[in-house]
Length: 140
Image 1: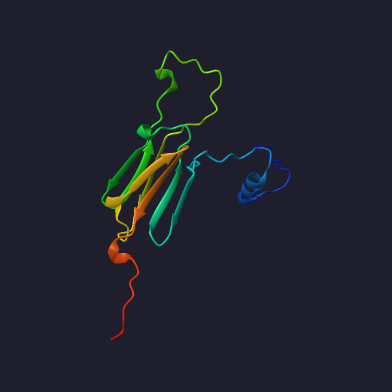
Image 2: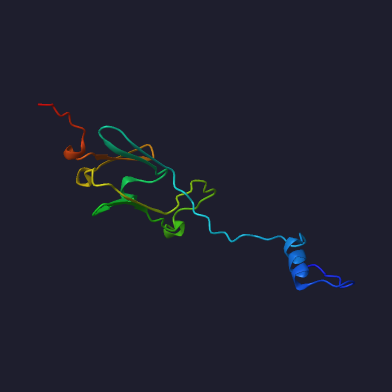
């Protein structure tokens, strides 16, 4: 903190304002940022689609769970030191743990979810329920 000169009369409010705007010390905000995982979510007339980036992961490492109307996709990163036979010279692929979850509307049929994984991209498809698809009604 800076030094406050008391040559003349300062009120406690003057001192507070001076100390607040003084730029001698840098204020740093806490590092509570959330790392967003790359995901595309879109819908068409057939259903709901999720494209989730899973670079460097295999099908067995990614977990997909459906509980009631919640869709959860997760990966738990294992420590690289588990395999003593491996010696990394450089590790540039960030295999971060993630735990993603979405509440899915009832108009989508979670029981018929389809999942495919190719080239590090997990694709999920949730079809619309037959009742929620648009219907034409004839006038009598």
